[in-house]
Length: 101
Figure (cartoon, rainbow, N blue to C red):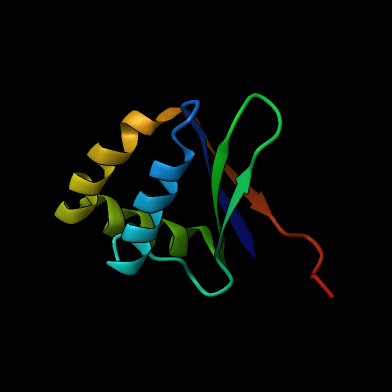
């Protein structure tokens, strides 16, 4: 099992806009979360962070979902609205070595 975290460090004061765009993307099928996926926020550290956390059985499954999303024209339009809200971003790909009980 792999856990992919897309971490977006948001511009100061832009959380509400980022949250609204994320809600729009989920409700319109622009962003699809696999079963067990979740969206988190962190108000500590350097500033506001929006984290999309998605579990995948294999890295190939992640690559298929990522390719499908990035190639969709509606995603490209949405992402142009989202980018100005982001100060920086990073991706973590973690391998789960013990099951959650």
